[in-house]
Length: 613
Image: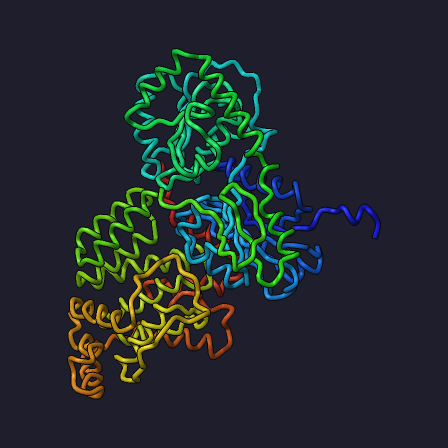
């Protein structure tokens, strides 16, 4: 083997979404994705695949040393690619990349993708992701945000802008909502408009070098890391372009090396005016802090300072039995340790506002204070309107309050997000389990029974319990299990620690509140005499919910299976709530004709043009 081969970079095939559509809207999103590839290229020979493909064919063609799969992105225009045959080339290590906010409602889709692709180790760009996906945090590492120093550096611009206000400032950003108006009303500011990512107006926002030059011409630039206490790109872009960072003190920001009045300025709603008045009266202080912040970023947070994926690749190659890989912190290096050492990766916990509200609500719910718990969960939605943990808990509250229809609707929406909006192969197992239970609470036992195995590979302890309920109510027995299955699908939801007996008693109370007393009695062994009596009582109370629509949907779905047309079969339950027939028709229309049909539909929907004004 010659020396040039010895020193070649390992080849990485990066299965990245097609982000090109963002070029006409929020173009900076496309720049972020390109910068990720550039970062990977510091250590790897990178091949980017951003089209539908066959994994086996790609591996045969490029012979990668490592493959990386982007997943879980909350698309504003980007297209999720389809990858088949991922169960081949098992000698090539695979990694997942959660390229999204930690609180994103596509996390269930991410976990589904990882299961389908056989991936067990993941990287995330958000430092708080381990707190938002605790089920996988042992195998989750952080590949944090960074800057490209070719874009963000000192352009030598004259400092003509006292303060620049840039970025979104809605509910997700409570610090900005408080701070921005206070600054805007007191100091001369350059204010950037807040256009949505998907808006065509977003293409007019400053990005790339123009944005970096605007920062470079500014004295002070405030930003924050959302209600989650995250470290966002702006934390690095602002000082990286030699402007003074004004921000919120959080554990993640301090972990990145920021120190108050040394290389940044920490403020809150009580002291922001006092501190900025102090700084503007002392320009030398601003210069000193700005210079220190610039050094911090260019010494620790450029794309050349993000070797974590490469470190994992090198460590994994020599990993021995009884060893594991851990990370010293969200910005730290990876290292090998003995499993018996009990050392774990260091994660940031306890700073996110929505997590605190969820914990408070959970405590109230355990105490039976459902109304107060519901207010906590609703408050979470003030930060993130689509937060799945809050919506799931609101569904539980609705069931506990006897509003089965409301609980059902919330659970339908959660499953839809993962199955139709994201396009995963199966839903979150806990959400699916409680969707089935909500059907039973509505008296639609037959639907629940038919659908319980619609996703046959899905397993979880909560789903086992849902099937146990269906078995007992249907008169087929089913004993109380003793423990969790080893191969459970990971969920984004954490459930209270209960025995099966405690859980069954809890769900029997819910059935009682949802006006299903006979069904509730079947799940309370002490309340009825013998299993035969209970089964009879339950079956006599079932609604005849298998109407013609349900029979039609079930018959069509069964026919698809019988004809072995699983490739065309919709991956959503055969119910009108999930637009099953629409998905079926869409699957039957060739891809080449969909654009034509869409144009025809749009033309027909346009109002006719008359001769009047």
